[in-house]
Image (cartoon, rainbow, N blue to C red; front, side):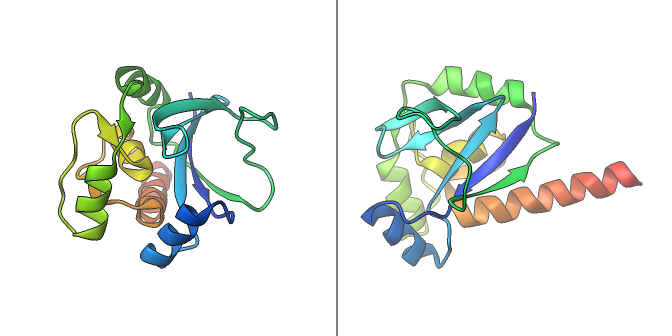
Length: 153
């Protein structure tokens, strides 16, 4: 099962603009993509959810100029799906978002996560609540580059 990190850089709504401004980034949301499904935690969907990749109304279109995709050859797609199954009923993580992103306190909330926190937890990376979409992308690119260098050696 291949995995990718999808970073949203479209205009979106007011919340997207606020996240881009606060993080000084072009990205305002992230998803993990595994075998045609997007996994994340979303304000619009009130928490953890999965959506099929595609052009339909209840799908996520990853085409066009709205998304950047990072291949994650080091990631375990099956583990991401298992993590989704374990957290599917979790709500959106407003408390940890505010604590970690606004007040710089690493305070994860049980049974709740914001998008980048959920993605980094699903990838089993340490301190997942410290990431925003931009820093999640930076970390994943670094891990992918490191993985590629090890494979080439």
